[in-house]
Image 1 (tube, rainbow, N blue to C red):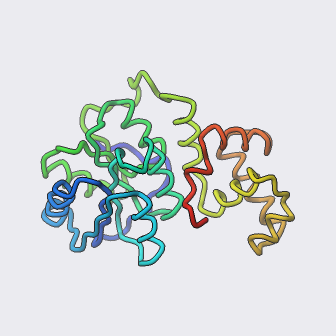
Image 2: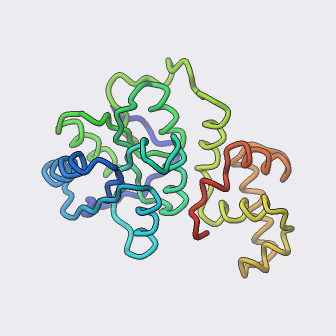
Length: 234
């Protein structure tokens, strides 16, 4: 099934390249073959750790789409998704996971996944998922019903992660500096931007996080272990 996106996904052209992040080599090979056969992907790279993927993304042009497994040696749950979203901006991240119950799917979509495909789906499902994403729609598997998800939001931390995923890369960096105790003028100096620009970003950050003060924003960020979600080279 497809559902309307909560925010626009910038996919206006047919994806040509993909980065698969999964620590099972045989599955990576099989998925690469599937994407080439049904999703119009012509170039595939793989990474077996999240940090290895982020290091690659810093060194080379971004792929058109990223495929992420939720269960990786250096990732805890949705942490990998939000770290990737922070690192790659509007590049769609598709979750392909064996953890495919309603709670997990809902949490991933709220945290900004462009789609969710159960790991052992048939090729037709992958074809439908990537077609939806190319058209700017979020894809969820048949059987997922948001309105009847009894655990949404599953935990306060997952809800916080979902809110944090709404931040742009610059906003995430500013929130990180706020958490370090910096004032607006110090942030402006550190990022070489105007203090008025920092103030505008802070206002947008608080609106997206649903908080009324910087202190509340810091508490929400720390409750979600925000520092650990930020790419290490930030």
